[in-house]
Length: 157
Figure 1 (tube, rainbow, N blue to C red):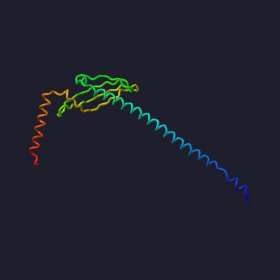
Figure 2 (figure 1 turned 60 degrees about the horizontal axis):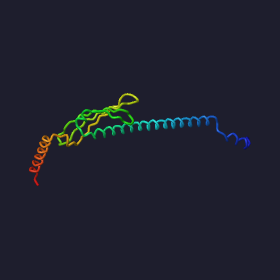
Figure 3 (figure 1 turned 45 degrees about the horizontal axis):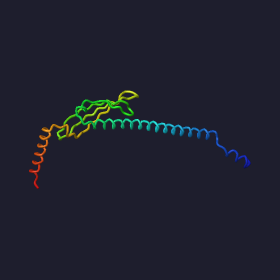
Figure 4 (figure 1 turned 180 degrees about the vertical axis):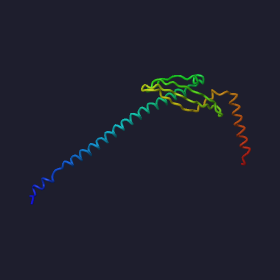
């Protein structure tokens, strides 16, 4: 028979296998947490650069929309942005069937300090009464007025 004092010493510590398994589990957990941390940092950096890009797009779009002269707008130009440097822009304007409404195809090319230029394209609709031909506008308005009157005559009130 083994005395009680000897039995308690044998079962009081961890075996070598238990220690190795604990270190392996801790190492795997540390690796996973480190990878997760770096992925979060990379995602935040990407979102920040995307946010800078979106800010520059909004800035250039706002500057272009504020141009009142149609010829100046169609000539295009360059604007210096805060994050991406120079932005070259071009515009194609097209009249719509709605009075004083113009379709604007906007193309912006941002100079990218980190690599190839970044291109952006968007279609906007602008309401510009000063750009319309008064004779053509009155013709369109009279056509619309005639269609409204025809629709009213067809209705059974």
